[in-house]
Image (cartoon, rainbow, N blue to C red):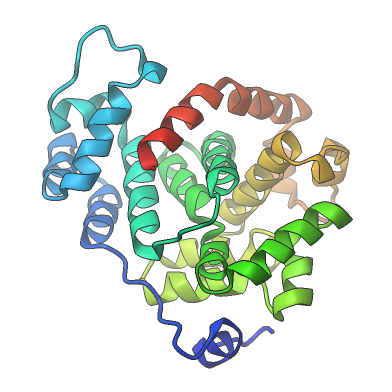
Length: 289
């Protein structure tokens, strides 16, 4: 459904379906972090205005995953120690959970995957596009599957069937979504990103992370998210575990510039990087709940 719009979406999700509004704290944080001269104090000042986010950031920095010898009590210090990427991810994750208000659905698997993709996206972007793009890639990695949350919120029973069929058939979720719902999470994710006014490169990567050849605005960013998504799936989902690096980096799939920047050793290092970060992922999940 290449030209899907809100009318098409409501036919499947229900005529009463309304897009959640993105909390102001996320909009403000994105504006600050997208500024080249943003500072720790500017980020901290935005977070201080949102008690929920501020509390969770302090809980995270004082969790066992960070092994801080003393208790951190100020947002400025927490932001400085966690780094912009972690702060952005926690802010986005918390805001998304609050916006969708999903109940009676276990999201641990969803968030474990997206946090792993965020870590891998940063890893690949640093090698392919340089450190200046790493924070952006990590944020896109966290929200690349945002369309799935719209399904879970509005048609939870149908989406449970999608999950069951995906595991049973050991297939890619977008194909099962198209069979069961008529369209997939990349299309819904694009509509959400547009609705919330997210940057164009966010919209493109969300829309094309399963089919990066379609990317035209920043293809390398989208390919980084594509590789990161596969890396997380290879580690976490058995239907992907037989996928080889040779297949993933096949000349028909990956542009030369990317293949020259990411080696088999890089791929193995990325998988190890995600595994090493499992304790951090678990702490992240506990704080977000």
